[in-house]
Length: 92
View (tube, rainbow, N blue to C red):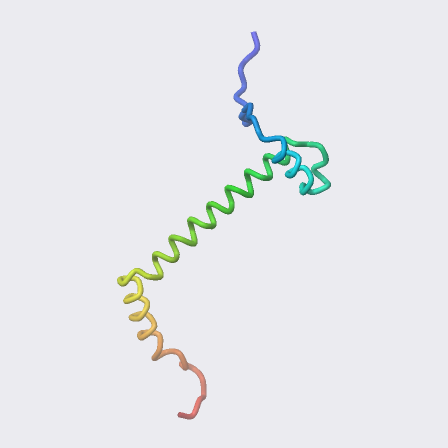
């Protein structure tokens, strides 16, 4: 009896509109060739990366408008202002 080894691959059967498949193939990088599986992997990787980037940007925007964070940034800026020219020979 064969021992079962868990695969790192997930197999799915999907139905896609022919027009979408043809269009995706027409704009796919030449190194993909006719490897539609590779094209789908690249498309899902790009989709995932864009979604993660968008989520990160939304969090940063929320932080940028958070009154507590803005106040803390003002405090830090004020504290560092006095050391800004520290060590420079600048005649005032």
